[in-house]
Length: 210
Image 1 (cartoon, rainbow, N blue to C red):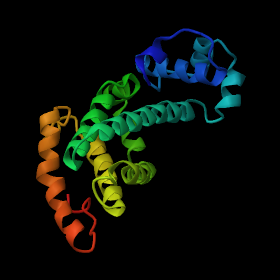
Image 2 (image 1 turned 120 degrees about the vertical axis):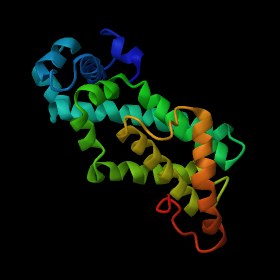
Image 3 (image 1 turned 90 degrees about the horizontal axis):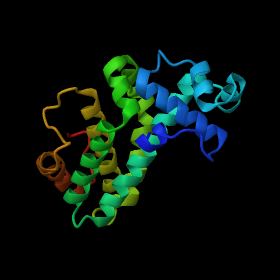
């Protein structure tokens, strides 16, 4: 959730968008557990019933929507990076670097990591995270296929998502890919060599070998 939207008061935006913005603003400032639906309704200048009309799942659904919007923005930013990259290594390094920087600057996510890490652990558990990996594979096919065959591009997209979520799980990652040079070193050391057999013989899954 962008800082501008979190900070913005009631404006000419739709009621659902106003509710989501209010939820993001409150969760970013005080956490999910301390934020009630009544708080969100008050901040959004609507009734409690209105919140549930648009978001029957209450706080949990609003958190999913808020984080989902952040994920959408990250994919869009990564697409811009790949559009301007000259090589696969440059595209992948830029992707994982911009993604972790975006997560580092996400106010809602950072508040949850500090005060409610169990919530984040649930959100990135194997069952919950699998749809993101599937989306990353599709995104990889769309964005990396100009460098490699589509099947390999899909694997690379998933590899990016796994690296970024692993970074999110670790409070002190061994390789800090918020540093662009270290992100490139990670790609050159682990990903690119694993793609050589994938390109030459049968397209084995390079992600599993990382």
